[in-house]
Length: 159
Image (cartoon, rainbow, N blue to C red; front, top):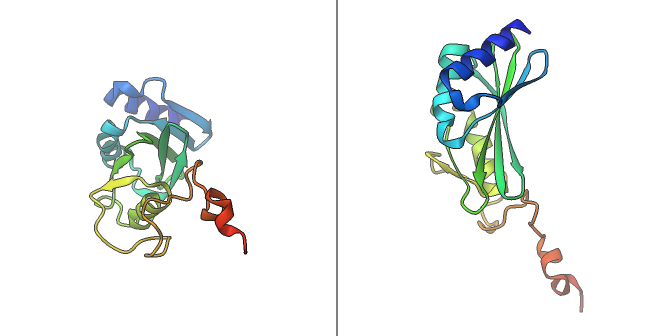
């Protein structure tokens, strides 16, 4: 895992806040927990200096008090680095990465619709994957979300 060690060392050298926050899952699979405020600097470094130029996908998670976004980045040599950022559940907000990865558009729209995360810099556009008439304050991937039938059981009963 020499390449992975080099990546870890360079990350910590450039960003002291990452000390102890970069780990290895197995060969060619790495994880880094990055502060939301420092994320864009770290992402630019990873792209320009470490060759992580492929955004494989993005994953949104409800972790209780926080919501998390994991950016699954890859290099040409097959090393995948999963970069996780957290944002407060009460006012979740991240910056758009579509300027760097145009394909992030759909992933970011999913974060808005399904988890209610504000994505600063995301261009206005259609909703995805929910329909345009879906209530904007209903986010079905949040752990506390209830279907209308569950939230008001009497409303689902027939007369």
